[in-house]
Image (cartoon, rainbow, N blue to C red; front, side, top):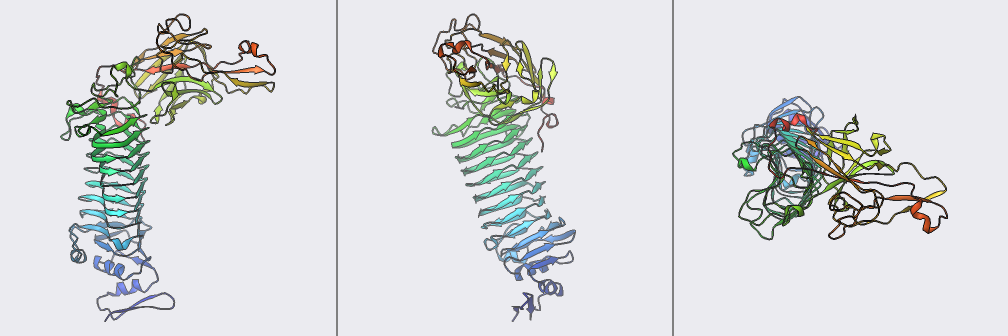
Length: 597
């Protein structure tokens, strides 16, 4: 009978086993690090793994290994420091057949392999899957290149607490296929050029998918089905052939936030019975119309399409708000189903919206719950200054609001180009890099994004408050005045003087208008005349945009004559035509946009 024994120096000795080759005996005579050379057959490697101890390291040292199909049934570290190429087998090994495994594979981790690591390999598939994890826990797949899986690069089934990070997953059918996976982490992977989906996830719960780049896949970037409470954060999901993100089945409380989902045929396809899914603070731009067998062409080129299943359940509702949406070829929001109540969406920042209503290319069946277009929910942008310098800020009504981060390719002030700036998820466009203390009255601001430019003329100056007050002065805040709404509607009443309007024109489907507010002024409905004139309707609160200083011991009655600094705000609403315009397809090529993959 075969026996193994451990010597005092922890050397593994195998005796009486005529089935072991001399190579296996030599490898197993070392301590816990087993060096695997390319001369080893698959059966020899499998035998070494079967005879190793839990916690041992299996190291591939040579350039390439052929016809590999390994079952891992204990906790092992399987590594390579040379990116060894593992060519998987297209046949099922005798061991796999005995276990009833139906699919071919390169590495198969059983539930007994929990705690294992697979790291540093280049796996080239001739098998159905390069890697399968079945029923495992706390298994890490790190820093591998995984390609040419006939069904998927990685299959993760009935498992939990897995880590998949820093892998390149390409040229498979599906990149990663998840089924009944819980509490696992996927970070910093590049998943691209797979012929079907980049990631396909069903019955996935409480997983964290963060900072991955999922692009140029043949169907969807990320397909999420019958899944709940997953966090999909800060991923770049770019230039996939059909959908960037597709929701199907029943989806509940998934958090989809801070992603750049752009340049897909449909950036988001919401076709699930959705309950409390949160899609917020994403950048959703440049969707491209194309003819595809998977979806009707009149739904392509859209930031988001609400599919037929979305509204079938009257209780279904997702939170779709505070996203940056714009420059999509056909639609900023589209309903694919006519026979349903209007879809309700929240306030989003539409980069090429109509100045009167903030409407993008919005399907009439998507009105955000508005009864009329002027009630449509949207964000607007204002310009101002504070102790950090000049800035732009997104607002919802009179409150600052965030949205998806995006890049302004160039800011031009009065003919001077100042280059690129970022708008963060807090909705703030920091312009302190302009090294300007103010925008003088009459300033012309041109903002370019992609091939589109919009122009705003400010009639009142906007002042930076970078300079600190002198020691014999202190600051007081002026109470908020009514009548200066950041949305620019100006339908409240006001007092004081100095109200004026600004107007602008646009290129590349941009037009703009601005409202600048003078000292303590309110904007009238007429848009001109003395402050507060024709200000019918209910009053609306303004921005806390004024800051004044006073000398010490100044009598209260003299405060109004001691205004030493005024924070002026110019409100600007970007414009999209209400009609559904098409744009030149050349404007939507990946190389024309600043999306680093």
